[in-house]
Image (tube, rainbow, N blue to C red; front, side, top):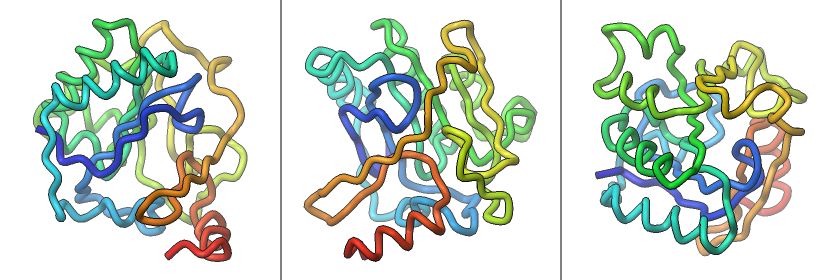
Length: 198
């Protein structure tokens, strides 16, 4: 089961090409200035079966011709066993996989990593690692919120040339405005407040 925060069937702001994105709920790292503070608490809980999320991803693949799925949050590696199953299944259908983590790759490869981390890493094409550090916020580098974060190409599917320009998408949802993408979260938050976001 996945404690699901949001699901977007197709976005151009969360990795190479057009992708589905799964935002999980719950994060113990709690970076100051986090882009999605509403997803830090594990509650309210919306537990969804891995198979149900996969069905939504495959439907998006058919409808929008997405090339992959991205995991954000919250902290994806704190739900690693479920996301490893989802990533493995997505790959079986020819989709690429990408995940952010507030943990470093070295930590995720250590014996102290959350349960299932090795399995999730084994099914990822790209990992963007490291906690968001507000004092090191970057305004130019795609897919990274702060300079300390690193993009790791774990397979040969993607390389640096595949990481296009930074994109931010703003969507109107029943709950209000929501952003997708990685940017200077302090500045982005100010812009969203000007647009009327809560």
